[in-house]
Length: 293
Ligand SMILES: *[C@@H]1O[C@H](CO)[C@@H](O)[C@H](O)[C@H]1NC(C)=O
Ligand SMILES: *[C@@H]1O[C@H](CO)[C@@H](O)[C@H](O)[C@H]1NC(C)=O
Image 1 (cartoon, rainbow, N blue to C red):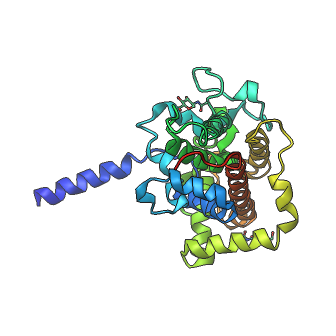
Image 2 (image 1 turned 90 degrees about the vertical axis):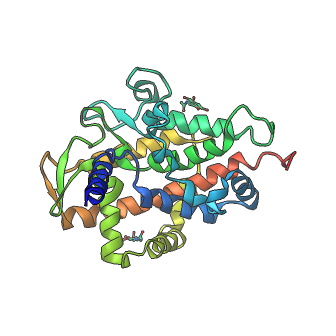
Image 3 (image 1 turned 30 degrees about the vertical axis):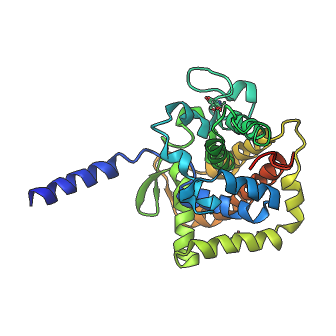
């Protein structure tokens, strides 16, 4: 009995200590990387497989939530999951917005994408690279997902929606969590019989049918930076203003109207994140033939 009680206490403590998330939930990241897997060139795929840890068993998507699991071990990386813009400002300005709470420049999701892109570009050059490339890959895969989640580029006064308490149907939540987890979870249950694979298949099908005209545009990068992430952050804050924050107040109850009008936005963001992650990895790993291995 004592042991059972102890077990109970530990369990409650564990559940209570789950941090307010700052990333698409596990499903969101998994979906992004599942989409990406399909668009990798053979060369990029070979490099990715080479950098995956044993436990991934050759599945790229299985490492895409790793960056959330190490949030407490790698404290320095925790501002790298998001961007805050000033209250009410619906655009992204790298100089103004890309820093951590101590004001250190580049410490935001766009800076991180550039950083880990740069690190991975050393893959063919130096077998004893100063970087931990398996970790660089896991970070990059994760942050390309995060930068597409509209609430990861939100206002600083509400911490990207984290401090906006809402009800998701009858459950307590917050606006950030609605976009990380609740919308996808409800969609999976209502429309896909709780089967993540069929939801991923539906998104993949849309990429080849519904959105096929747009996909080339998703891939193009009008900026000078290799990773092109400034533009993705700008799109996110715009979507945050037009869809996520819209008609939501402290204490709002969000249900079918909100769910059904926002779900297509999220599904397209997952598709874009996946296609663009693959495009970026293809670019990174296209450069040279491997000199070792
Ligand atoms: C870049 O990565 C290194 C670890 O390799 C880390 O120490 C640094 O803070 C990162 N900077 C950004 C902007 O991501
Ligand atoms: C597929 O595209 C249609 C039309 O844009 C959209 O209504 C639907 O929600 C999309 N489904 C998925 C799974 O992306």
